[in-house]
Length: 242
Image (cartoon, rainbow, N blue to C red):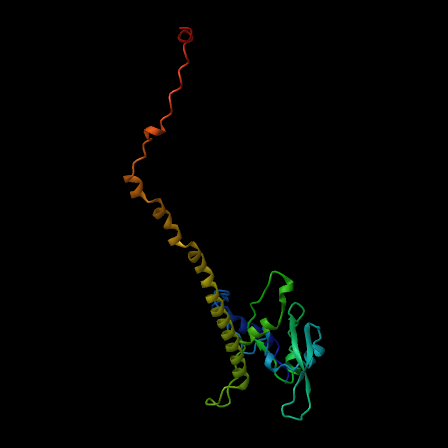
């Protein structure tokens, strides 16, 4: 059936009439945060415990904005007589978001679920070098990743969340222990100056002065024997002549 001439124009006018009477809604950002879908591609978070340094995400990244450094360590055998194993230890994991185009390929190809999307998008910087987020910063974004819907409301906590919470509690306990260990070391150092002052030693000075003894004693008078002898008078020459 051929379309009726002018039907497209009528549909367009109908849309215009429906929308022209509605109130215009303006987003009040940043006073009001936008309601984003839970899987919004905002920033990438790293779950370091799941990373095996397979380098697959860095190889598949079309922008080459993922930087990974690692070294190998020898793991002793789990049982006596077993063979030693070598494993890769992550040294650096960084993403340069000034180059990232948010394609999500790194998250899709990760075989161990170490990368996740976070809906956070407020990480603008005044310096472009600050857009390179190291693994510590990428770990902080993991706490903003929405949890997937549980298959069973009464199900246990996923082991990934338990491992992440255990690591966070361990770091917090180490920070608290180091802070408590530094406080007692500072208190004795502050208490040393009063001990070195020795107030009793300063109180001995009045005791040595002995003011009562000086008030009762009178100065010794010079004895008569100590008086100077009178000078001898010169002899008169007339006495000799007589």
